[in-house]
Image (cartoon, rainbow, N blue to C red; front, side):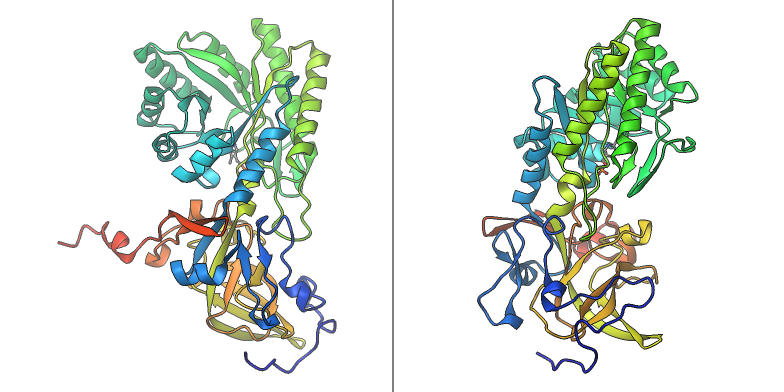
Amino acid sequence: MRAHPAGPRFGEILAPAGAPAAPVDAEAMHALAPGVWPSTAVRQGGEALTQRAVTIAGVDLRDLAEEYGTPLYVLDEADFRQRAAAFRDAYDDPEAPADVFYAGKAFLSTAVARWVDEEGLGLDVCTGGELLTALQAGFPPGRIAFHGNNKSVAELELALEHGVGRYVVDSFEEIVRLAALAAERGVVAQVLVRVTVGVEAHTHEFIATAHEDQKFGFSLAGGQAEEAVRRILKLPSLHLLGLHSHIGSQIFDTAAFEVSAHRLVELAGRVRDEHGVEVAELDLGGGMGIAYGDDDDPMTAKEMAELLRGIVRRECTALGLRLPRIAVEPGRAIVGPSTVTVYEVGTVKPVDLGHGHTRHYVSVDGGMSDNIRTALYDAEYTVRLVSRVSEAAPVLSRVVGKHCESGDIVVRDCWLPGDLAPGDLLAVAATGAYCRAMASNYNHTPRPPVVAVRDGASRVLLRRETPDDLLALDAGLG
Ligand SMILES: *Cc1c(COP(=O)(O)O)cnc(C)c1O
């Protein structure tokens, strides 16, 4: 180990304006907060302090880095299954039947689709590619819901051919398109109307009167949702199964879900009044927030389920409606915390911030090609040194990628040991949702593999791309 750099000691370090507070001691700098890290992640004891590394499902991240290379997504299968089961159990109420659909867009592979099936959940897909993955995995098509604001004829044909259980229709064109394709096959497609309820929620805030200037759904305020219902009820090859609303992602404010549920039930009441039809299902979408840092305090699946059941029951009673089946569609809340990304440090560049502050730019061997969320949404992440324990004083750091963009940031503000050096391994927590799923080949970078760990063993879910994979697309080669 290198000598500790001379400098301030723990407890004396002042953060520059806007930066998070420095860790109070080496333990805090290396802690793996429960909820942020996968449930089986632990920092091993036993060896010399400076040799202690992190294991997930009993597998040392250093060994995984050695075997599979970096960057590497490591997925804790037990954590994924526990979260899926927690949602299933939270909504398993004989007096208020409900379904949980895992939103496959957060991360999907055939193995993941099988876990979702084994844990008794349904599956949301929103493209032909996601649908094909589910079908290849042998996922029961009847428990698949097909989303998307521009499903193509080919995609709808594929879904109808395999008997996909439900279609969340999103436009008047789609109603006509799906009805015609279903009629051609002599089948009746089960549809839910995607309603824009006028609630927009992201992270810690929501706006209940948001104007509806976005691409998804039929506007409630503008009357299009009711018009969609009218048109569907006239088409014999479509059956109106229910109403659907999805209000955003990484939501902490339960009031946003309450307003959304309230407006859907009101609409169900108007549909009953106009047509004498009581819709069988209300789908309240996904968007439940997870902890990316110690300060995030997400609600549990159980709390959320009780809240939604309560509000739907209350509002239905008030309107004299039969209690519909409830559906929810968590993606991030199931897969997000299950996965960490392991990177190797390549360079450490100190930059003088003035006023006596320094920032270390820590470059890792991946970046915005494997995690676009920081650049795209200013997402915040927790990062730890996982190949050893350091007692060096922390330095305000920024973990950056290797791509040709100054916005190529993985973790904007964090405190990492001041003796970080090339070859050290860092892990970024809670990268299971929308990281591999949104990964790109920017700068001709092969996408990293996803390795699942369970009971002391690892297996590849998605292999690493190779330069040959990338060159195979190049039609200029003989
Ligand atoms: C994205 C999406 C989800 C999942 O959202 P999370 O934030 O991952 O829970 C669920 N339903 C629909 C319709 C979506 O578009």
